[in-house]
Amino acid sequence: MCFTPQDVVKLRQKTGCGMMDCKNALKHSSGNMEAAIDFLRERGHAVATKKAGRAANEGSTFAIAENGIGVIIEINSETDFGANSKVFQDFILACARIVINAAPSNLEELLDSKDDSGKSIKDLLSEKILEIGENINIRRFARLTGLISSYVHAGGKIAVLVNFSGDISLNNDPDFISMSRDVAMHVAASNPKYINIESVDSETLAREKKILHEQIGNSGKPPAIIEKIISGKINKFYKEICLLEQAFVKDPEITVSEYINNFSKSHKTQISIVDFKRFERMEK
Image (cartoon, rainbow, N blue to C red; front, side):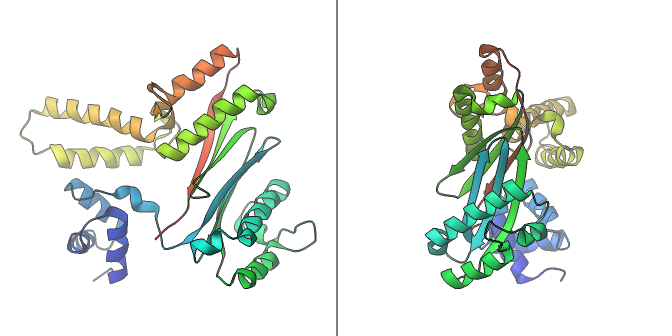
């Protein structure tokens, strides 16, 4: 057997399927987790694949944008109680500000970075572990520059940064701040995977088409009809995973792309989304 009971539990957490279904899927895929997920999806078993990013951690995410610099960070703790403490919240803010000022390129550089008192983040982390009485782990962070919007949802469950192209002075424009925050809120709610259709990689597209062929290929319909159905489902797939193709949460009659274009026209400027980051706190 090339997988463990823990792998079965992990697959069940990711898909919401029964234990035996998960065990059979892993057996069929020789222990490959992604292939097992595809196996379950192809057979219509997976009802909760959105749980795929969850893990047994508590903690908090945070995002901040200042003077054209945006930072998003996730720090994990053992309990929600620890994550909600002032000590923990002050620490996550301190880490974010050091990322703004020191621009570390990875976790190792962040841990070696020093605050205004000369203490490294590594030393501060050790202090907070003792102070809170829980293990704390800096899991990930990202830093973007330019036209930036940030948003934190549900007290740190989800954090978002959105990076726009355009006149940098718009960072101080109230209308842009409102519009860009709406887009960041949309990202938090809709969890897009890509900016636009062009950014969807060929492997992801081929994988989705394979799944659709497995689901529809034996329906008995003529090949031309099957291809038409698959084409329609791929278009729907794009609208689900591509930010600019998604129906805007505050006005489902328009897409996110149309919402941004409407702002550009009304303010006689030109902006577009060049990047976004969405961190969701890893949970049990």
